[in-house]
Amino acid sequence: MAAPEKEGNLYARPKRYSEEGMMRKSILRYLHLATSMLAFALLFAASGFGQQDSGSPIRVGIIGLDTSHCVAFTKIFNDPSNPQYVPGLRVVAAFKGGSPDIA
Image (cartoon, rainbow, N blue to C red):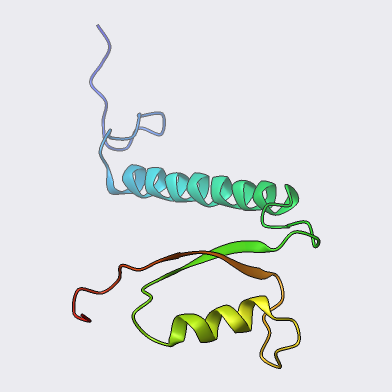
């Protein structure tokens, strides 16, 4: 049998749930999380996600055809001669439903 550990013993194992041990474990956990998130962000940025071919526009749809806004937005998105033209978008669909508050 081993002798019981005394408080002054330099080689004594730390208590399992000491504040120091819990803080160290917490710091290591956050460090691991931060490192993992940084690695994921770098991989995400390096993969080129979000880059689109400049020749193909993003196809969008409009929900709610009960106001004149749908016609105005369609003209802005689809007509290159319009001064407020938004390049890279093309309205290709519309749905008459919308807010139940507007009849």
